[in-house]
Image 1 (tube, rainbow, N blue to C red):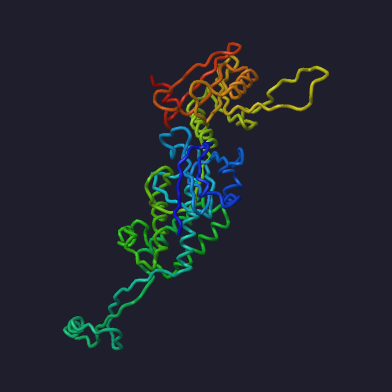
Image 2: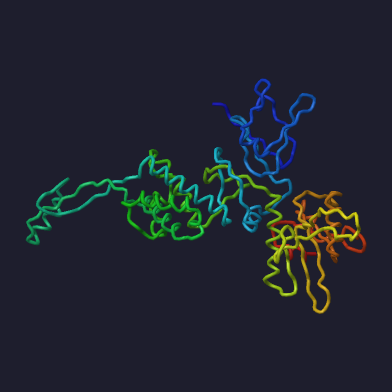
Amino acid sequence: MSSVTTLIVKEYETIDIPAALIIDGIALRIYPAVLERDYISVRWKKGVPIFQAGGYIGVIPINDQLTLDVRPKVPLVNLERILYSSNHKPYVLESFQRAYGHHTRASEPIETFLVDRFLDWVEEIHRFGLLKQYRVIHEDGFTPRGRLNFAATIRLRSRNQQSLAYQWDDRTADNGPNRFIKAVLLQLADRDEFLHDRRRKARLSVCVDYFSSVSDVDVHSVLIDPLVDDVEQLPSTREYYKTAIVLAKMLIEKSGLAFLSDQHSVLLPTLLLDLDEAFEKYVLTLLQQVNIRRDDVRVFDGNIDGALGGKKQLLKDSGLENQVKSTVQATPDVLVEKYSIPSIPRNLVIDMKYKEVKNIVERGDLNQVIAYAASYQSAAAVFILPSRGPQQRGLQCLGTVAEIPIFNILLISALPILRQKRKP
């Protein structure tokens, strides 16, 4: 069996891949599922293939000999906090697996992913068989089975009882690992957020039925069972129990997945992250906390219209005879309005860019935010960007256009934005 080569690259980075790993004669050896969503792009230059990573973070299998470990292009101190706060839903490559470490908390999409994987492994248990263990049953009577217990029989005779004491070994599924798994299934079945999906609800119900011969117990009371506490003690013939129990523990602890960790706690389908999307949602979520704390400031999502959105027409109707009918929409990432009665509300437009910027944003991005600021008659325009390091931080003014100041806010980590803004 050939070994797998793993190359570590950054998003959108050009990759120098040895031809032997990816070319078979004149054909490229790339899994179709990888090419379908542009996880990697290929172009030809002078007859030589040039490979470039896409905009997704994660471990991406290219073929049976090559895997790409795509890392963020911008340093992120706490990637998992961004994923948790943004509630980002990863893309799942079901056919491929990778190892993950544990994280202290899970977002709703990650928790749902873990629930579905847990049910997958419970179905494997049903397919390959419940773990059964022997236990000693003690009884007394006149029709003994198994082995006579002479000491217990003598004690019965001393109490003038003529019955015989006996014992036998009973092989049962009513044991610690099965009790634990059933308890977690019942706990999940009581949580409404997992039951909106009819298929998941049906799967949960069927999985609970698999354990009908197993006692109902409190989920925490069985954690001390040796086979639950240490899954490595499970019989080699019941390997499929290990991942089920590890996932069950993660679910009751509300643990998440560590994406950039060197830990290898659990093997699961590959998850890929779109950090452009996650970063924008993370910043918007943090800014919208202002809506709860203050009455004089409102934060709107500029990509939607209506009461909660800031989207509008970019250009006003000129009133001229040759005015075109089609319109262009202004969709700043965020619109912030400040009210000070009786004054007219002031606003600023914010654009989030998950980009590595040395001094100033690209010209196209700058032109766009200037157009938005002019259309909204804003008091200021702001870019929010991830920092390249501790030396690049805080609020920076890029200059003014028509007396509208343009700023950068550089996030040095996944800390709340307003806290970082106050730092010297």
